[in-house]
Length: 449
Ligand SMILES: Nc1ncnc2c1ncn2[C@@H]1O[C@H](COP(=O)(O)OP(=O)(O)OP(=O)(O)O)[C@@H](O)[C@H]1O
Ligand SMILES: [Mg+2]
Image (spheres, rainbow, N blue to C red):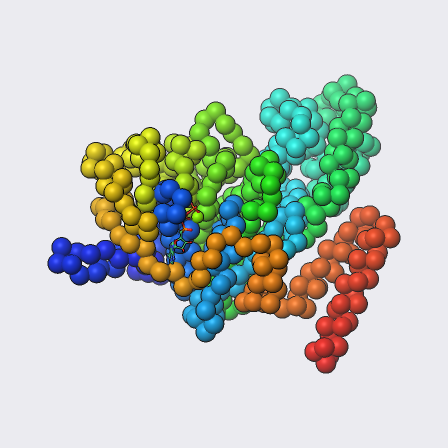
């Protein structure tokens, strides 16, 4: 795929002839940063890029914060993208898309430190692994369970906090380091979260397993949209995104070294995800890690924001491709130009003034090899803007998202319900399990099996 390109749009040459403007896929492995005011055409640009990646067979994970990316599934019938795309729409904490077990990564030995830090933040206790007693206690519980080949769920952890299966933390007696009373308080805090009705929806659903999410039938390109647009609470959004990004990092580390684009992660509107120092939400570290290391694994990262002041300066200067649309304030333009110029050798002043003259859907592309102003191509999807949960449910249950057949979905649901019942043998869980079984029988009957 070394000569493959992604078409961004076109520009008029000096003779007034339209010339295509495209990006080599290999260029995307050094990441792209998109900036532009609202309405400048960023989401259209991103959706157009994803469509080309679908055509090229490059698996895509996209984090949707504003709720526009479901539009990608609004493909005209018979279109090449529609035929090739195996799209999944994940909705942590809700079920209008595929519900997600946000804690699935908790049993991943590569991720214990970061998952436990996030958990500590949720619990409102010290989260720094070097200073936090709850951190070392919970991490030890997870390690103990992994070594003993026991399941690691949030419920198991809670039970072990209350009734630890070991007596020493490191070389010191647990009772000295973390006495029973403190353990009780910690367990109660975790129980408050786990017992909240809304929490149930956070731990029921598919695992965030990038290997599985990135596998599709031969000839199809997986596209995974991880949408947090329905979450109103900023902390919940950041928490969900951090769990996804952490999973991406550990998946990335397992990918062989390559020098072309093998997969792509896009963030459409990264408000609050990678803010400037000293802010340090749990999303920042994994994203920075990918911006620094993903290239070697063929994972391209595309970040996008309306507001350059909200994005960590060092993080954004890891991108070697800049796509800059109209920016109204001088402050925003200066910020972007400063970021670009630290990465390339472009002339600062002319750049600032060309950015201020851009029209909607016009972008300045800056690469180490040169710059150009272009108009974005029309994407094939119909850009209708944010969709309601009901519209999304409808689209992904009856539309092209049927890639996972109804039976596969039911089988998945059955696994989840069975696990829920095994973990917690309540009447409600039993009823849910029975309902899925009935639905499976009905579906089998419908198909004449
Ligand atoms: N590539 C495109 N193909 C077709 N229509 C487009 C394209 N890009 C933009 N548009 C049109 O322009 C409108 C605004 O563009 P878009 O949503 O991409 O802006 P944006 O920069 O993402 O704005 P915001 O920051 O508010 O998310 C779209 O709703 C759509 O109608
Ligand atoms: Mg947008």
